Length: 183
Image (cartoon, rainbow, N blue to C red):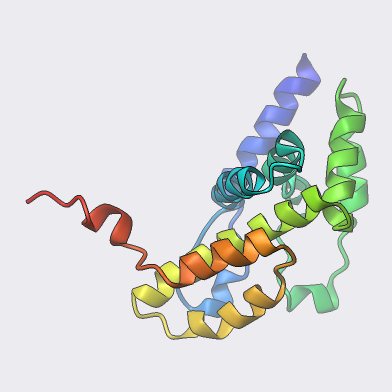
């Protein structure tokens, strides 16, 4: 039980770990836990759009995909040029002693390999979560957000992910609540 409690505290740490790429945008911010939540929501939607895929696997991959960052930190694209993180070691250490450790390792390995339909959908959810933030920032006038959108779109691998991305970009980020606005 101690190992399980430790895992929960480790996951909670992600609330305090900022995503490092936002410093290059010049505005916006997000912690890893916030990011993982949105990725999980998007992955659930993508799983529903692809009924032949294993919905549970997609959502669980998305929920846990950045948990190793509790040990490695969130390394941005510039840092990756100079710093090498050992995510596999972090995954092994996290999984060690968990009764579901092998399943945990398998899910993250599949996510990182990006070969199965489930991992492709979960990875698309990861990109779409970032795209949503970029769209909100752009709608609020952040010019630099537009520079990143094309790069994010280029990383999408599934038709379902591309459809959601198109819907995100063609929507006003405030429209979901403005249509029911009561004065």
